[in-house]
Length: 208
Image 1 (cartoon, rainbow, N blue to C red):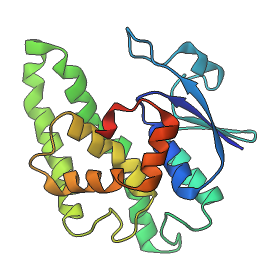
Image 2: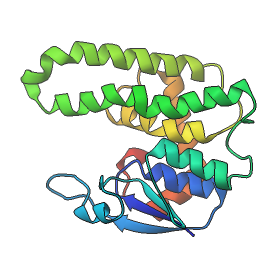
Image 3: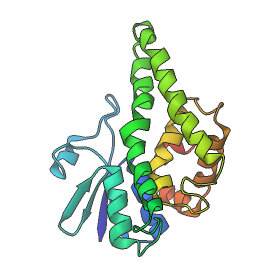
């Protein structure tokens, strides 16, 4: 049985969604953010020293990092679903999206969130942040202007991994210039497995 150590309002929601897409049995161990600090509770450190979510346990295997977990679950339990053929160049593009989400696209969104809390003190940083957001969201918008999903007509794990980029950008009010990204967010949020994962996971502010 796969166990997901799930933190409310976090990127671990993506893992629940993937498990629903794959129709795999799983258990959820729930954790709540501290209402004052919004940080994960210390109990998560008993599962992994970093104390972050998502974390999964699959037998003796303990894994962190969304892209690693998505790759592992699809590779070990997907039976060829939700990813291109690993022997093709298309697969390499798929892996690129898995890493792009947290390796590049997340940084300006997180900076926008934290620098925004500095008020006037953060003002000098905003032009660079907005420039990077335009670069990454513009790239994503161009890709999604050609196909409904990142890898073409087929929905894959790349869409699940990248979903939080679209959702966080939407929550920050950044999607008006990027209608293809907005349409993609609406499209994947309408998937039955996505809706089922919300029922299982509980509070998730980015599903709006």
